[in-house]
Length: 215
Picture 1 (cartoon, helix red, strand yellow):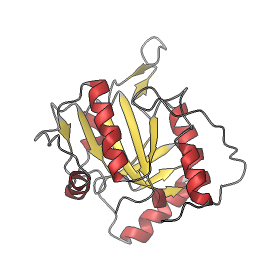
Picture 2 (spheres, helix red, strand yellow):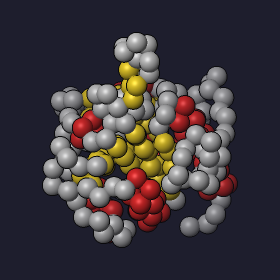
Picture 3 (cartoon, helix red, strand yellow):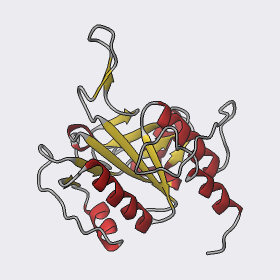
Picture 4 (tube, one colour):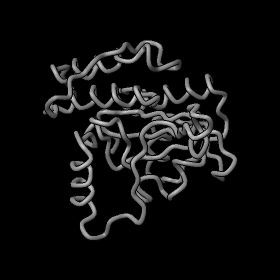
C-alpha cells in the first residue's frame, strides 16, 4: 500500500499522547484538536477522539495493523503483569491469534485480569466508547474486569452521539442489541467525601487500540 498523506496524518496519532498515556506507549506526544466544527476526515476524528479520551483518563494507542496491536498488548501484559485475559468474542480472538497472539484465554470473566471487547462506535467529541451486548459479547464484559481493552477500527469513528446512534440504526435496523451504553473512561465517583475515586463500580483502567481496519 503506498504511503500517502492519510498515512502521514495517522502516523501523527502515534506521536500524540506521551504526557497523557503511561507506558506501554512511551513514544506518543500530546496534541490539541479544535472541535468548533465536526472534523471531516477520519484522521481528524481519530486525533480528536484520542485527545478527548485521554482527558477523561482513558489510554489510547493507534496501531498500524493487528500485528502491531498484538505487540502493544504484549507490552501491556508485561507492564501490568496481566496473565488472565478474557475475551468472549470469537471474531476478535481469531483475529488476534492469526496475528501472533499466544497467551491463550482465561475461561471466566469474574477472576480475569483484563477483558478485550469490540465497540459499536467511537464518539470523538466526548471521547466515549459506544458499547453493546453484541459488540462486547455480553452486558458485563466491559465492566467486571479491572482493565478493559477496546479494539476498534477507523471506520467506527463518528463525531457525536447522534452520529453513533445513526450508525447503530443503519447496522441493526429494528433489531437493536438488548444493551447499549456509553463508556467514557474508567469508572469513577466523587460521592465519598467529594474525593474522586476510580474503579469503584467498573474498570480501573480503560484502553482503546485503534487500527485502520479490524475486519
